Amino acid sequence: MLLIALYAAGLVLLMREAVPWIRAKSSGVGYTRGHRREAVRRAENPERFSRLMDRRFRAMGPGALMLVVAVIWTLWLIVSLVFAPA
Image (tube, rainbow, N blue to C red):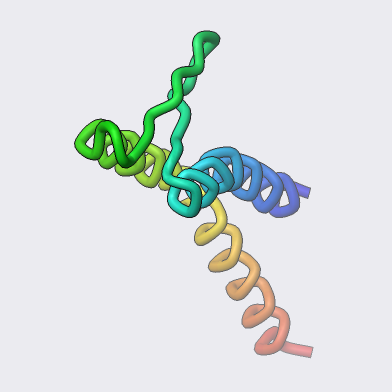
């Protein structure tokens, strides 16, 4: 059960930052976080847009780490089941 929760949490944390990051990279307009969202356009302010995209990319780290841990845990369980004494 914990493994399923780890997969779910990793996907949620990863996708809540990955979707806006991908959308901003393709459109050239990123939005800040918070209750007063502000549009940051690549053409008008390239330095701020770059910093915003870097922060979004770094924020994907915990979710990606959770997914990596879940995959390693799953592989460990599969290997232990295959090589378990009968």
